[in-house]
Image 1 (cartoon, rainbow, N blue to C red):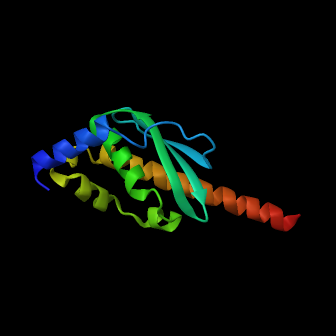
Image 2 (image 1 turned 90 degrees about the horizontal axis):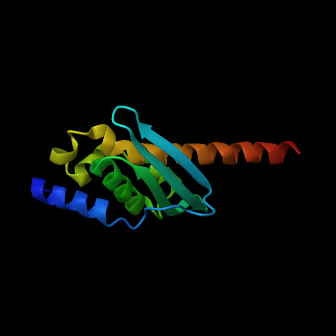
Length: 136
């Protein structure tokens, strides 16, 4: 993707998000941040049969962090939790336009990192619940 197309794509994701907002009844909500620049993302996730059936995000920060959160939410909605865990940051950077986002790689990967953390927290809670159920 050329530089101009990458910039236009980021601006469109930032200005016209479809996954931005709260998610009532979310199975997990996780906050992630980038202390270096103050960007904050909260990823909300609804899970069914080990799949992310709905992903929403809320946050504040630069165009890159917010556009990347939208991109990740859109790309991973419907994916299995395992697919989310396996997605590499380099793929997101490449798909967003490496030349543009490499000036802010932590911003570009904040959404993915937060989504992966949400999956980890969800899986941990499920294991704890299972252990409790088995010990009763």
